[in-house]
Structure formats: structure tokens, C-alpha cells
Length: 489
DNA sequence: ATACGCAAATG
RNA sequence: AUUUGCGUAU
Ligand SMILES: Nc1ncnc2c1ncn2[C@H]1C[C@H](O)[C@@H](COP(=O)(O)OP(=O)(O)OP(=O)(O)O)O1
Ligand SMILES: [Mg+2]
Image (cartoon, rainbow, N blue to C red; front, side, top):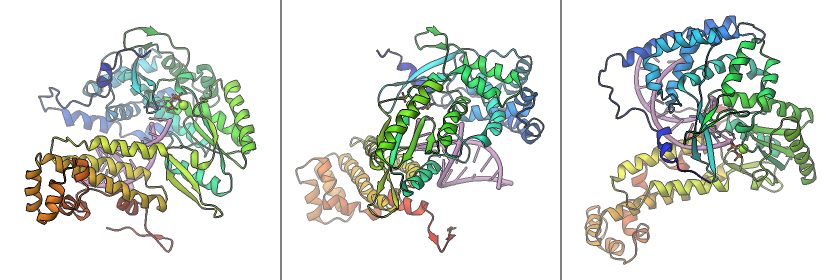
């Protein structure tokens, strides 16, 4: 029962103000420097109210420096406006006024968070994800709370929790998972929660926070923000009894507080696990153990934490079958070493985005296409660089595929076979090879692989103009020599 | 070393 | 929210 409302989608991701009427260049960099300046005294504020048992945490949250810092990061994120329509640019323009106003209203405990705007975006695996976009000013408050509470909770979170945390991420998570597999725990209990953020239990969360946070005013503030009603794209207003908005800067942190209880329980049972947000992988030695662990952990989650397990995503899997953070694992028989490989979904998605970014009917110049592709492939390889060397060698065929897609564009841009023939000659291809490409009588895709065009655009031509996934892997994986890292430049 | 900006990825 | 890569500047 999907509703219309897709037209609002573009609004959410509407990029910042390229076409906007910012005429007077006056003050644009000025107010930014004002923000930077007032955000500077961060060290002072955090020193006197760092302790969790402090009764004056709200003063720390509402300090000018902290609010300025919070506004800066909200502005940097360039998010969409909330239900009050205020954009991040407007908020930045009114920064001095906004900050004093927020400070006043927060300290008086009269901050009104306003409703949350619901926006539907498509999920990668099909279905729709309901984002909750709070007002910009509310996002600033959430960010301000985050900056104060995070240092308090962060040190007590479990080391096997890697999602949304400082100095942790997918790479540390995969590293830890690989360790467990190498130790011989080669059955994976993969647990994913259903609609995780939407089902966070408010009272449970606040109770757990109250064990560490003495200042009740902070808890009341968070409670009020959690209870914000949601306004659907069609205007219907819905009261909220559970969940934390997917789009609030504080939400990921709150979700870690909720699932920290789960981490402690798994640790208490002596389980080896890696958790990233609502995706938990538990490593056991046998399938029998896996079945037992799956059942008991599921009971714990559903009965104690009141969270529902997503039965479609959750299962007991062999390392080759898992899809964890985009990776899967390969156990070479006998040897203890584990290969980190691209999961099937990841491979498929890589190829489809390459295909989408290189349409045969590309209208602009081939160089802009290669620039776009380069940006994408560069970021892609930065993330997937931690796959093992064996996998990296397979990336060579992807590179070749990319080159062929680009050659197909070049071929098509020459419209007629005769033009292509002459163009190939001009690039120094022999008459025979040029004719074999231009007049082969096949389609552009077939032509893109023929010797004529390949000789006009050989791999060496692409070298330096377009990044190669395989080459990037070798650049990014630090070449190690005798326990010493060598850095060029 | 710090900070800003762009990009990719995970959830 | 976090991470990583690149660029710029002090
Ligand atoms: N684009 C996003 N913006 C903000 N939060 C997100 C985003 N994607 C994921 N999250 C957060 C909210 C989700 O509840 C949580 C877990 O993600 P995910 O498992 O993919 O979806 P889900 O748990 O909400 O639904 P599902 O039932 O499909 O598992 O991560
Ligand atoms: Mg989930």
C-alpha cells in the first residue's frame, strides 16, 4: 500500500542552495567564522561537567560553545528541513539569535521539539524506510545532547559493538569477525532486528540512562523529543509511543544504549560476537550450538528487551553465506587463515552501478563520465580495500569491464560506422583493424571489445585517466616491509 | 598536528 | 551517526 508522496523525496535530498538567491555576498563567511569562534571554547565546557553524576549536565548541553558546535555539525550535514520549514542555511544565518534562544528555552526546561516529518525512501532490499526528520533546531539540540552524553557512555560500551562509535566502524568489525573465524568458530548466528529504530522502548531506554545520568532535566528533554508526533507526507499526524527517529542525530547513540544490554548479556554468556547497529553476528563452533544460541538470544531480545527479530534476515550461516557489512568470508580448507571477500549482493550492486553510470547513450563528453566514475570507484575502493589479496586480483576483470563500457560509449558517440572508421584511423589504428571494428556488422557492445577500438583505447590509455580498482587496492593496502610501514611522498 | 570541503561505505 | 579515501588551508 504505497502511497504517492514520491515527489517529496526529491525535496529531502534536495541539495544545498546552488540556485538560491544568495545575492549579497556580505556576511556569508563572516557568520561561519562567528560560529567557529564561539564553538572554540569546547574544552572549557566539557571539563567542569564531564562527570556522569553531575547534576548540571543541562548547563553543559546549553552552553554557548556546545550549541555552536552542534549547530555547525547540523549545518555541515546539509539535511532537509523539518516540519517548520526552516532550512539549515536559514538557521546558520540566524545563528546568534537561534543559539541564545535555544539556550534560554533549554535552561527554562521549556524547549518544544515540534513534530517530526516523515519521508519515505526506498530500502536497498526492497520495501520502504520511514525517515523521521526533526526540525533543524531540534536536530541542533539533539546534537548538543549527543556531544555531552557520548563521552560519558562511550567508555562503558562493549568493545565488540562497532556501529555508530568513535574510532570504530565496519573495518574494526570485520577484523574482529575474522579473528573469531580463525580461532575456529566457523558457524555464524546472524541476528537482525525488525524495524529497529521504530521499536525502541522509551521507558526502558530512559530507565537505563537514568542509571548513569543524574541530571533528570536531560532525561525529561530526551523524553519530550522521543514523544514528538510524526506527520505523514499526506499531513496526517500520528502520536508516537515507541521508537527513535531515523534522522535524529541522537538516535544512533540511543540505539547503542538500548543494545548495550544485549551486548552485556552475550558477554555474560561467554559468546564471541560482533555487533554493528542492529546487526549482530555470533560465532560458535557447531551448527547445533548455533541453533541453541539463536533460540535463546532471540528469546532474550523479544522478552527482555521487547525487540522483534527480523526472521527473514536472521539465520545460521556458513561463513561463505553471510552478508555482513558488505563482506563474506572464505575458509580455505586446512589452513586457518580466512579470506575476506565481497558478498554476492556487493558484487551485484557494484556491477549494476557501473552499468548505470555508463549508459551507452551517454550524452556528454567521455571525460566527465570518467570523472564521475572515478569519484565513485575511488570511494568504493576505500571501503572495500580490506578484502584480501585473492579477491583484489579478481577486481581486474571489473576494471576491464569498466573500460569496455567506456569504449562502448565512444563507439556510439561516433554515430555512423564510417565516422568511427575514420576516427580510428586518426588514432593510428591500421585500416584492417579499424574496418574490423567499424564494419563488423554487430552492435556497439560487440564492437566495444574488438581489436580496433581496443588498440585506439588500450588499458594504457585509461591508466592515469581513470582509477583501477586493482591498482587502488595495492596503493591503499599499506605495503609492509619488515614490520615497518613505508609511506611514499 | 588542526580545521574546512568533496566522495564512497555501513546501518 | 560513524568510518575511510581524496583535495585545500594554517
Ligand atoms: N538511511 C538511514 N538513515 C538513518 N538511520 C538509518 C538509515 N538506514 C538505517 N538506519 C538505522 C535505522 C534502522 O532501524 C537501523 C537498522 O537498519 P536496517 O536493519 O537496515 O533497517 P530496520 O531494522 O529499520 O528494518 P528491517 O526490518 O528491514 O531490518 O539502522
Ligand atoms: Mg533491521
